[in-house]
Image (tube, rainbow, N blue to C red):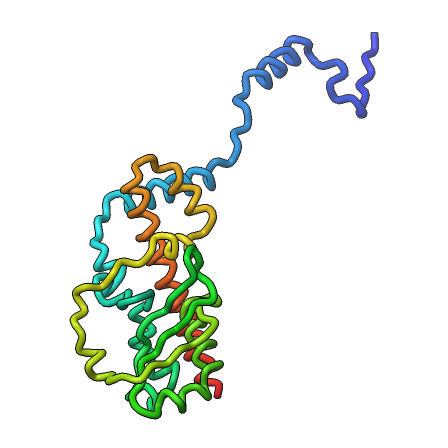
Length: 227
């Protein structure tokens, strides 16, 4: 009896036992494992990041320089950064004889406030001609339309600068909360301790506000270099 082997079917005429063994071997193979290298790296990275956040304790003073300084002046909000950059906002000529005194908002609002400036002698009259520039540059530091108008009053700037800065009111929590992202607000709302929730809102608002001011200042410096 002649057995013809078919080239198209290599398994034809093969030993059934061997075929069964092959089948058993294939069934006994371990399933192909997915590449978890990337996932593992991500998990390790997240773990290290969590350990770094949870184990590194830093004081608020390290995070926010001069946080205890005169951030809010009498009779309204005034960030210390505006005072320190006043010469950039109005120019050296006017900065020597004027000082931002306060920013007042309508009740429950943080938009379109009124900036009060104390100036010596006739400087107040002269500065009225640069009102648009003052408003634009102040709003640049805040990152939004915080000021809509400017009011001037005559006074001694030197005496104003030498006032006692210890009695500085705290910033409104609602104002600081306006700088938080929606995601951050939702996270804070999950905190049931009201005191802790308020502290987180204020801290987050300070950080966000400082970041926006730094970004605005950097953009202003680049524009100044171009000119």
